[in-house]
Length: 88
Image 1: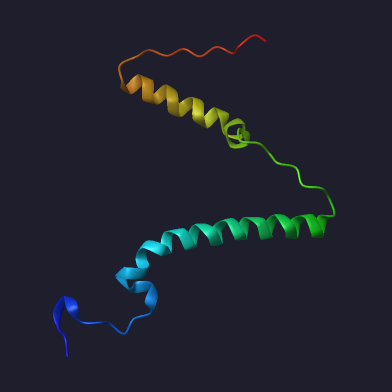
Image 2: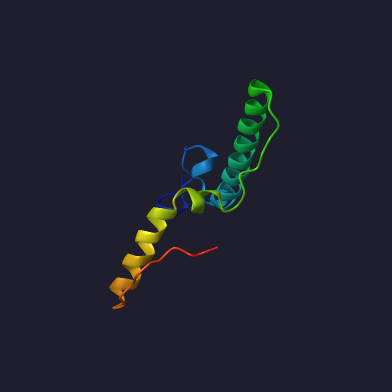
């Protein structure tokens, strides 16, 4: 019987160091699969077509929070920041 670091544990294979490198890939695959399943369920239940919100959706949604964050970051670096809306 082996002891110390050479002993084989009775834990599931996911705790085995040889399988740990694959765990991150598998979690990513399941996360993408879950996202796709949620989208499919919403399409089927609401009977509406899928509309992608776009890559800037969350930035637009949280614009005031992002502004405060970046102003605070610049002020911590010793800058004085004044924001004015862009005239389009």
